[in-house]
Image (cartoon, rainbow, N blue to C red):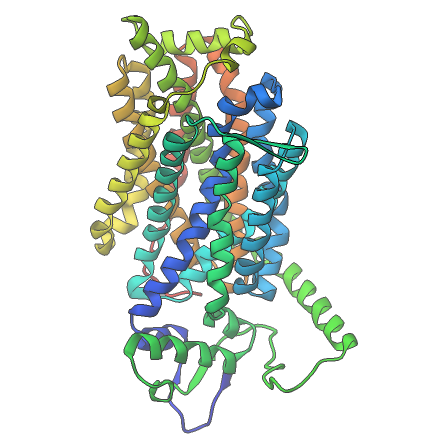
Length: 520
């Protein structure tokens, strides 16, 4: 055990210390600052699906180029997961949120300046490479500023913020992409889709700026042995929430288990030499490698394996549906305009299969300007997702509901995703898809919330990044495999998606979810 303070002072662990800070203005401010970061992840992962229909003529995109354009951001996220985990768990959450936000914003702006598909792919790759860190870190950062009483609400706030981002993006596309914009700056040519991409950099830049004014996570500082700094951070939270002086904070001494950490660097006036800083960096790197050891031993090995497999299956399924929805809605809208009565999934997927096989000229498709109605159904789906999160918030204050919602939701979604096969109208497809994506969003938030409280501080961000990495691997795998199932028959993809949900549900039966336990 390690501690900071005088022997006569009141001693408290993290949970007691953070509970004394209460919930108030500071917590509201930190959640507001987190929203741009959470939205930035949605913008990075989904913006190209709205851009490509408008930009494919200008960039001369082939079918293979479109596939690579969708996958390249996820590829960057997968590659950078482990390095970001090391940086966040050894050097701090705040550093990642500030530098990651600014760098990602610059990468997105560079993608908006792209004049060909190679440049755009390169900068979207760097976009995914960078945004992966801040997105995972902000979840840990939020959890570590809230006590046990409010922590489960924070995880739903993450899902709510992601839903707001998912609603904002198609709304931006609805109002902006149908407008014809063209101008030149020197030899550079700019169109509507480039202005749209430039606007999607705002959340990342705003996130990096706002976190400059926030302190480092007190739980992280305690895990590193910096108790004096952790106490100062807690006093700041207390002063803002309680409208009192920092000196009135009742906790004067912090105590917590801190494996292999020292309280060095407590003296801010002490300047480290270059050699000392090098040794500290080397030690942090070794500490970072040691983070992997507990993940390969009991009880975390079996638990993490079940979580990774569950998340892999559920994200493979949900993104297979989500990324195909715009095309499905567009095809149904075409059937409606042309007066075609057969709007079953077999008819919709059959037409899209013909297009994928090249029976419809790509250049002819490129000449079609997108109408605002093209994005309307996507806005409705995202709006239902947002309402769903608002309705689920009160239920999670009931411990039994919070601990069993994952199993129940995955069980229901097994039938919902299969039910898409029987949808014969745009309205039926919209309702089933919206409910499915909303419930799956709640499942993903529940899994992340469970992992935040189950895994220790020193490996928490690494685990979250690995969970998200497996989800992104599922996204890539799902969108590669889905066309093969579509070619087999119209019912094959839905049988496959239902099977994935059944596997995820089975894994959930072996997970104990308690989002209100103490942080380790």
